[in-house]
Amino acid sequence: MSTHLSWSQYWRGGAGESLQAHPASPLYGFASEYFLKRISTQESVLDIATGNGALLRRLPLEHGGLRAGVDYSDISPQLELRNKHSFVRMDGSRLGFAASSFDWVVSQFGFEYVSREPALAELFRVLRERAQVMLLCHREGSYLCAHSKQQLLEAQLLMKSPLFLLARQWSECFHCEQFERCELKLCMDSLFAQIRLPKESSLLLALLHGVMQWVRDVQSGRYTGQQAQQIVNQWVIALEANIERLAHQLDVALGTKDQKYLINEFKRQGFKAKTVAISEQGRSLAWGMYFSRGG
Image (cartoon, rainbow, N blue to C red; front, side, top):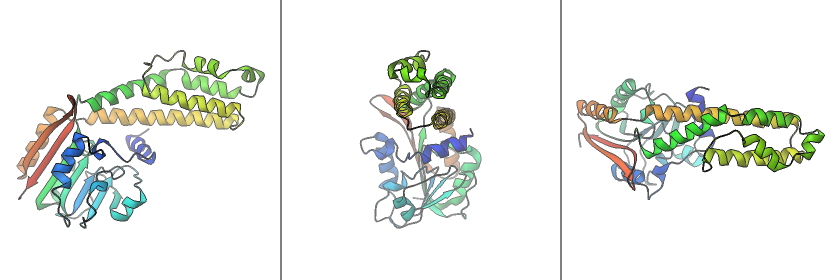
């Protein structure tokens, strides 16, 4: 599965918020301090790699300037957002906007996914002379990346396990006498006996819940054998998409060298820089970066 498709599936699944959207989060605090409290009511803003528009959703009601969100994935923002903002499928390294179109460029866990050099060139091209930029980026070695790394490991182990093969085989014989005598607990023991994941594994628990419900539905006659097989195939596709997405996230996380590179590039364009290594309860979360020019 391609990275584009894995992210498209992620957004189509309804993902629309992040830690930034929770007022108690230091990520929200940074976005509020360096973007939401500083943007004037008529200033235009471009949100790069907008996802489902969670960052644009935080704009004050009185804001009346141009509000555009772009993402290379097939995004599906809620209707309320589509009515207020302009969403376009667009690569951040090839922006289809005229030069000097925006007073602001912002991005929440998105700019790091775009090809760096062409994305910077496009960002500087579409910004006006007196412009501001707010970026929240994944930080290499952060708690968020460590969590993603754990999820990636769990997903990879599940893919290598006999779980899906056994589930397919089991669904093929659900109509026979052996199936009728098969109790749910015995089925679960068979499916998970060879999977070596920690008991607190979030993926394992979620999948266990799904498989248990699937078994009940098959036993009750809700699904035919073919339909049961299709559900197993959907699990495989979803897991493959998660593996692709998580690996991509870990690959683009910014190290200290990457962060310094961005600072230097903005300074070359006449921006003043404010960067913060954001953390919470001693756990590293992200890079927060604010750049201003001419103000």
